[in-house]
Image 1 (cartoon, rainbow, N blue to C red):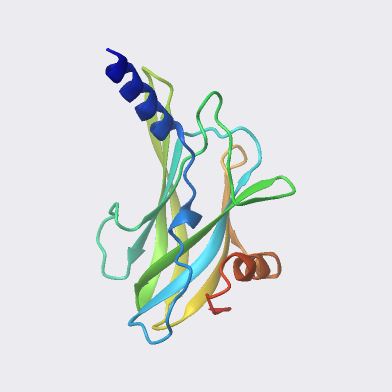
Image 2 (cartoon, rainbow, N blue to C red):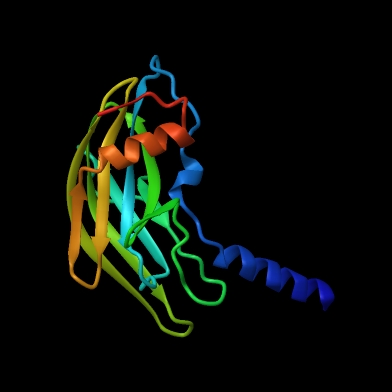
Length: 179
């Protein structure tokens, strides 16, 4: 019985932990790679999160449907009350770093999937996105800030390179980021 209770608490702890996409950003990238990379940020209004999970799906130019292999996931902390645990705060925004490493080509963010879990009641929603980006072989390029404000119905790409590139270079000094 003790082991069962311990397993239950461990499971709840792991499920409720916040996850940030920055944990998956490599510390280095070689320019002789066949792949390329983009880096950027995702920003939310710094209020209590509405959703338990945010899934930003992207597609390659030949992809027909979204897949779990091509997405960025953000899960706010959910121990007692939901709250954002971003990489940093910028005034009224919770900001997360992200990166995407793929083969050279044209891509686009296509869908933002939202998941709310209220115990017995769960709901899912989707917000269409149309943010194009290009990955170049052997390069690390800066995309920008994807800003999402659900209450005001805003989802847009902002150029925040003056803020973001120095922060990326400080945290990931071995990534040679270009604009």
